[in-house]
Image (cartoon, rainbow over all chains, first blue to last red; front, top):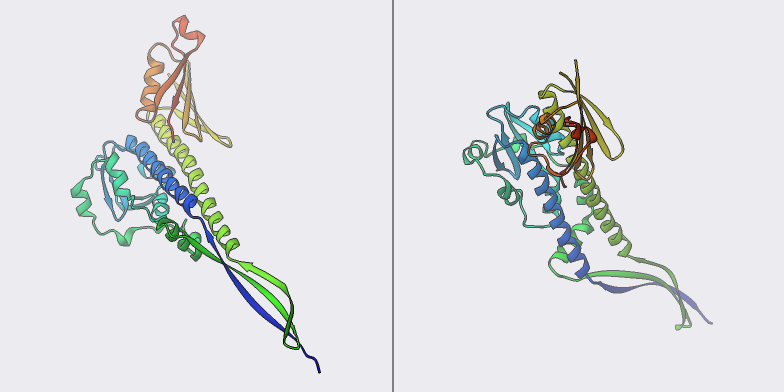
Length: 253
Length: 66
């Protein structure tokens, strides 16, 4: 009497991915993000020339002791910074792009960027050395952090390790009287799609951050100009289009 | 009573263009300098025809880069 037997077998193949290109992309992205942060802080430095500045808990501490910058909190918010009020004249200012830089495991810190632009006020830094209770959490990275595979990819790329991805073929093998008669692939799964999707999410998030930074510079600059114009006695009307803002300043003389 | 007017355009790439109306003499550049202080460097100034009629009506383009 003859017998036919069918078995489901999983065959695993390991594919090695080249990480060289990814490493270059991550490194250039870090440089780009750091230059955007530097640029924003340079713009801000022009507005807060009379303020004391320090870095505390990876955030910028700004004190307008002389009260010379009108609408400072509004200007900071419009430049896209996350602002916590510490005291009446003192603000703790966070830049979310720094979170992305840290996430990409760079050694660049806010302090190193700030050091190029501002002189740090040590007394102010000491006075507010423990700010934990007052810090607003950044949320922009929450979605990326939930992608466990992404952290794994970044770690491997940055350490120069290759990324190995398993491809699993589910195969049905048929035996007739214990003799192999043939096989048929039932389905095939691999983690490549998962990796691609995670990298695509990272790319999208970084593009969104860069676009936001551009809009923030425009918004912040608009607020500074509007505040100054009003101080100079102008009545200001704002007209916004898709990619531009127009300020119309009118004053009777 | 006269009216002084300044129209400022701020672009997403950070460039600023400013045009003044109804200002005479050095007032035009003075006003723009006060407004733009530390925010932008002047890259181009176009004088309007009125400038040559002893009226300092000037179109100014300034840039701030991101």
